Length: 100
Image (cartoon, helix red, strand yellow):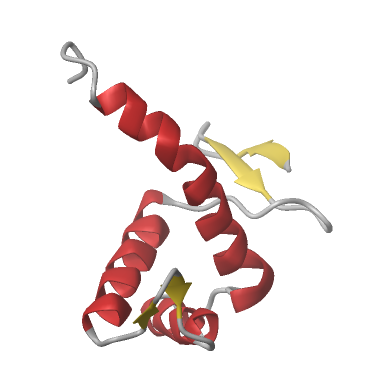
């Protein structure tokens, strides 16, 4: 990712070929809401999601961001994988009495 200074002095990050995708807070919010939606509509199976859920989530993301480059694999799958890795740490922090 390269950093470019725009004419108004604001630093803007541009992706270069082969770089990792940077998610915005709005994109993450849409993905969380899409996950909640597919869970409430019965896509949750025994220990995870039913087959095809990534393509369904890709559809949600493309509806919310029509001119984006979202793909089920690797973008959505990678973000969910990262969240799964971070979840135990977050739960541990939230169980502390002074965590706010």
